Image (tube, rainbow, N blue to C red; front, side, top):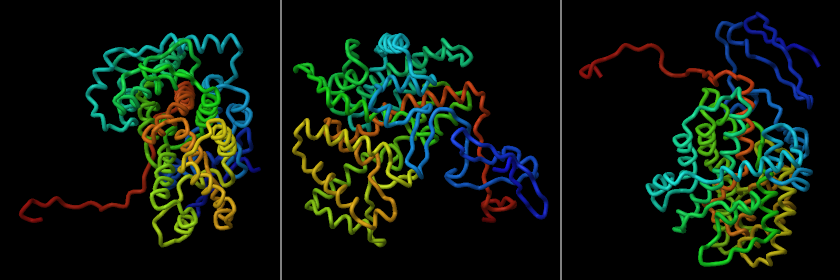
Length: 428
């Protein structure tokens, strides 16, 4: 592999270094391009071919279907670790010892209370407010209750900010759900593990005994692990670029929540369930909708199939499909929506049209039906995604701040009007 790339513009050649990642990824460093060429830039809408940073957190190979966190395969992490273990790994770089994990878990629990004045903010939201809008607002509001600036050069300051956010974020997420349903707000139960606590905060009713199903808890644990980090996606890039201005952790994460809300990103699993409900209302004819998806002139899109990065089977989808099958069997579910989902998956996997285009079911397809099986309402799907993605956002923000990365400032190719003379009202 050459150690330099040569770009020729109007007969003049410019050299740029070629960098090799630890997994043999190749990047041309064009950070000096504009200065060397007196103003030339690259144009890459959507940044699909542009690396915005160097990172040691997540390796993703979409062609081979590989996903690793800090060198550990996602398949191994979901089977052998808990959500908080993987969170520690993603954020701090190594799997925790037993003592480190116990301290991490205890420190999170010690910060699980949310200031009671936050309820005054919640009271201002209408019941119809989408939980993601509520969550983004409440996350940003945490800054008001923790006004001190995090000293990024202090390991202790950084650690305290991290455990504080990991503790309070699920509480805010559960509150977003409960106000939407007109339910009283629940608090953390520090006798429970992180995932079990999330489930009780969301679903426990004061008038009834709440029983945790260990199969359901494990399914949610695996699902949230699969969402912990996914390289430089839209919301993660948003967190990093917001943080590059020296914005605090809570504000940067709030920006990430807002980016995740979009139906092309975190809202995709909600779109899957809405599509399944549409198929059910139409009579449940899966073949009809398969044909609609293959018709170029039909606006219908088959949601939950294919991926912008993976050109093979999404490795997360393989894992969560098995978890979904186990969960459905254990709960003995009788849900026509889930039956349609399984039928749709079966038909699509055997159809040459989808196989040729590598349109396999992705993690959004399975996560939506698991959330439904767990009793999570559709409008909360993206909130659950946010809970899962939180450690990755924190890790990316931490890495960016500790590396002292410059403020994000993309360029543009201007295609508007050239210089014009101002005209008065009478002349226009």
